Length: 249
Image 1 (cartoon, rainbow, N blue to C red):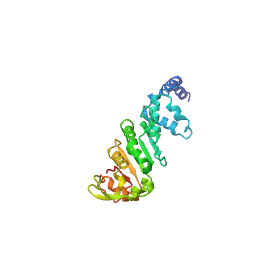
Image 2: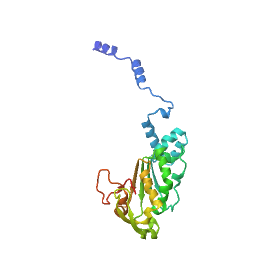
Image 3: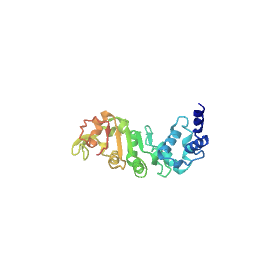
Image 4: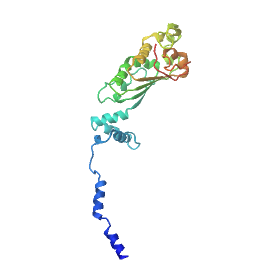
């Protein structure tokens, strides 16, 4: 019994050696660290917590943006990744978010997904003539990848175009492009005028990788169908598509 006990004690590992080895493996840095030394995925996770956590909401975004330009760029690309502009009822007033200069600190240069809801009678001339430049800038010099345009008004109505005389004035019009190319349709005269034509030209020539136009399903068959291109997979339309991209006239 004594011999076994002696051997048992003799072969016990030295406590000091175990302690040193353990400390070597579990040594942690306890001082401050450089934020930009962290992997991008971890930085994104930290910034998302600060920007969108319910406890931090409303307090930290402005503070983060003011720390330094590099943190502003990373935080803004997360904060402005998806933006919704509700332009219903603006009565032709340009949206300030889209009319500011595209500087290094302009929020709109960080937008990847932009959704706009607007009325044709008040905003179509802005989209085709004023916003088109700003939106193309956001795609070429910024991060814009997808533009969703939602038209709320139904055709035909004064709310759709705004001019009763134009809505009641129809004529035979030759369709030069799109799936109805070469056909003659009876349509309102305003579709041949500058605001509507500029809008269609923007949709067709824009630098934005993806544009989605959402309209009322009934409006598709009654008004928009002749203007959009044939489906890339040859899918038959019959005015049933919810998404029309791109339109061409």
